[in-house]
Image 1 (cartoon, one colour):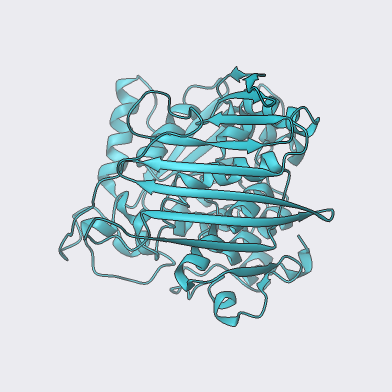
Image 2 (cartoon, helix red, strand yellow; image 1 turned 90 degrees about the vertical axis):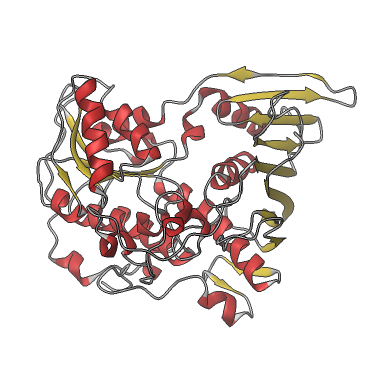
Length: 432
């Protein structure tokens, strides 16, 4: 990425970069969790299960979420940290080393930038950005403030998947020319919910943040925010971004040259705006050689593919890589197997869980970006692929991407969709 294009807020000039340094591997790393929903529970469990890591704060705009977290900690005889609705209360605490972000997608980049400006390291859930512009700015913040920032692409910390990618790099599968990602989940309709009063104990203005202010409905709030363009990115940016990242990693590619996507919202008449079915295709140029990647989201009933999902009904989540010597399958997050040659004889295989949260703490202690398995620039590039596919779907045409200028060639309308109009004062900064 060309840093001369990165522009940060003037707030950055006065923001402190002072942070309590982690003096040794035995020193305690103090982490605050932002977002106490379902994924935030995994963050809390991780930080309270590691030696010399302390859960030092909670942030959620819904008091009932924070209270549930505190109750769960007390049942485990764990110390309950202070809880706040506003992340800026946590950022003012110089004794907190890192921020662990599990808030809705539309908040990820701005909260990360604020944390970097305050001298905090950041673990941010996928997708790290809500649009392409934010993918640039989140990397800019990490570089400008010299912070350790990791995206929650946990598969990158799986020894099994690391081995699979290395075997492809070493040529065991020959010329790996194509990757296919799958996200088949039996998601039911979200129905329709009426406008109603904001529930007690909820700061709805803070929850809305950078997005346009809409009347409160239950469907726009907890979890179902994924299915509205203001706050989410559909299942392509929810579950699918994991598989997009794995496919890009395995192929060894960065920016695409061409992106096209088709799909729609089939079967259900409900409040959902994002497609429940989408098929995206990408072309890459790697040293003059073409590579291809496809990705598909399906809802409701579906078959399995390439053995992914086995005999179980329901979800089919994974990737298939096609090479001249065979093909390799990644089943969900931590398992791979392969088949070699025309006879498809079983090849290398392995199943081993990731240590992604632990990997982040390793980076915090070492202060070395190279120690991170999913450093923020890797996550940001994968998010660009997801955003471009969504734009192609929404416009109904193929996009030709120019990675040098970060624009869509000969398409001003698509280029305008690389960013959004931000609601003051929750503005992702564009200038130093």
